[in-house]
Amino acid sequence: MRLEKAPLVMGAKTDNPVSSAEGLAEVAARASKKGPPPVHLWNPPFCGDLDMEIRADGTWFYQGTPIGRPAMVRLFASILKREGDAYFLVTPVEKVGIRVVDAPFLAVDALIDREAEAITFVTNVGDQVIAGPDNPVTMRGTPDMPRPYVHVRRGLEALIDRKTFYRLAEAAMPDRDGRLVLRSGGVTFPLEP
Image (cartoon, rainbow, N blue to C red; front, top):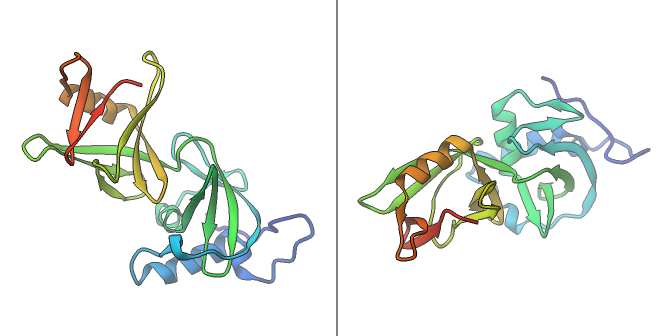
């Protein structure tokens, strides 16, 4: 899928190549050649909203169409920043708002090392994080409809997909109160909201 330039707001000029998904991808690609972009240090001016959305299943959409290139999604994910409840794609010179329906990422696998008490999550955009004090597993929802999440980086979370959650539940052990818990990185995480 080729991403076309689109105005950020009605009547906005698109002379600046960063004002499009394609321009943002170019900037992200250049920045990622030197390692993960330091988006937490960038505070550029807000330039409007981009017609981009991350759906609850982890699919990224641009102008209502799924972004079919995984490399493009990984590039956008590398410049994603959260401020409060809002999400932005940022470069050193520009910040554009995007919509996120639930969590921006999806945890699609977990490597469980019982001896080391370490659970390594893998996301749909290639991030790997070990659950622990910096990357907690949190439960939301209800006991009938649990919604498990793991912190990935800088306030960004991944919803843990169903198959991975079931594997975690199988590996969980009861605590003194009879609740199922996981242990990773020296921290105990309950598997109940």
